[in-house]
Image (cartoon, rainbow, N blue to C red; front, top):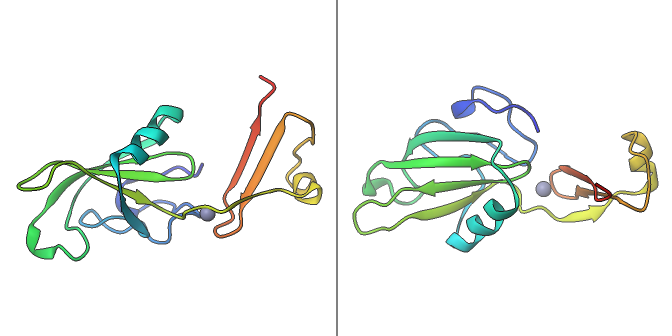
Amino acid sequence: MDRLVPSGIGITPSWIDDMGTFNNLPRPSTEVEEAVFQDIFRAHSPEFLEFRQIQLPNEENEGIKDVHIFYFSDTAIAMVHPEGKHGTRYFRIGCHHQWRQMTKNELRERSVVFGRCIHASVCSKCGSENVVDSSD
Ligand SMILES: [Zn+2]
């Protein structure tokens, strides 16, 4: 994964359109249930954690919210801390990947040794790649 630094002054991963600023979320973002965050967090460790103080889209009159953004290898979840009438809210950030298996030519181009235990996918929307060797 590309190395991230806070608030859009670094590299933007291929699966994020716009890193935004300290006062908004990266785009695209979609509100999701807590279970989505739990499912991702159960299987993956965040690679980067960022704090922002934001105004949510379409809620400009609701004030500034404290947010922690957990960046995983190919997605991110923003945890909006409870405030006022709202409890904790979660926003999934980045491409909603559509994975497909890489072709043998794509594996060769990336110097991935094809084998029964190699699972290699590419997102047809943003180009993110996921290569897992399940033999370990
Ligand atoms: Zn994607």
